[in-house]
Image (tube, rainbow, N blue to C red; front, side, top):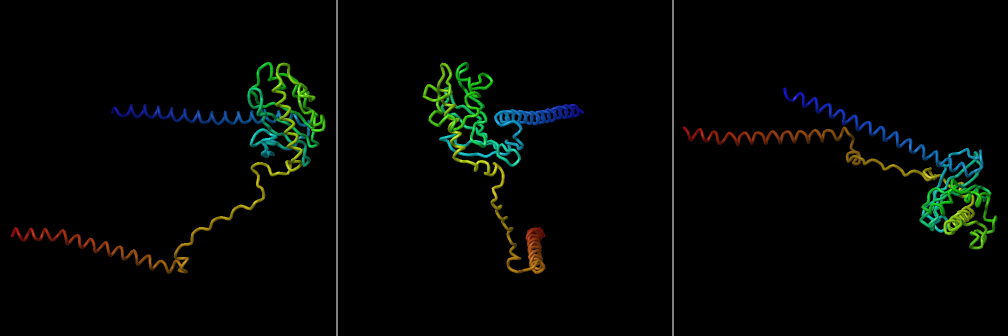
Length: 274
């Protein structure tokens, strides 16, 4: 009688545990989905801000590739988002890294329109000094918009792609030259990379898409020994049956020998008793 309350309590605790785990799992799934949706929306907003309005008919987050040129793009692998208006190429948006920022790497978005001009530059993340180097953020200063929009490798000439302190045309910050100098160099490197690669960046298969290579041929299943030797299943069955019969006969013989072995001591004991 005492076991019943214990079982009931265990059942109740188990139910709460299962329900709690299920609730946590559902909450985690819903939260992850919401976070992913918010991140996607934020990235799309950044991309749309640096391409001509109304010229994006594809999904650049799906139409993307990966390229490698650490000397110009600052990282071993760089993502490139392609923007198209139907079938017409509009812009390439690259994510170069500024490796030599004052306080560490700076991650950028650089939009290069199809004619080679800059559609815009934005900062994704950085660790620059507040009040000085952090003016590269468009929400804190217009510097990154005013300095780059509409620029190209010909405007200004390549030798003038420097901050004014180094003899170029780009403004530096008061009390902070390293940060703008590094950003200018990174944007120039991105333009050089796009110029070198040309339209191949638009035609390369998107990341995750098939590249046209045929799929590997399936490995054939092993052929049964009977089939390999030319025997049919009907021919193999008598052999299987005869093998089973031999096993049964052997077992019967062993059983008879065991019975005789057990009976002999009893018979001898009876004789001795008589």
